[in-house]
Length: 124
Image (cartoon, rainbow, N blue to C red):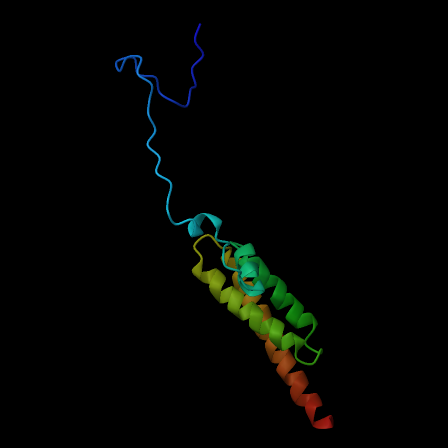
């Protein structure tokens, strides 16, 4: 009884010749041992968001509305919500409702932050 490997097709027409594998090692070993280039934290975060840009826009927009009083934090979060919402609208499978709400909340947080900074900066 013979046990055959199912991943290799068995051809009876060839006969009993053993298959040969032609292998030529490469002379350039840098490709095999080279480490991948380091990516910045922003690029790694961007790849982790893969497909969740609308959710991130919604989260940043809500946080920008809540933290508009924190001297510039609401502005930064609102800007992030606008950027991620715009990116999410360009992705075909993204949730457009979350992206739209994230953009709207980002605009509200951005405007509220600007009004707050405009009202408090003269006193510093």
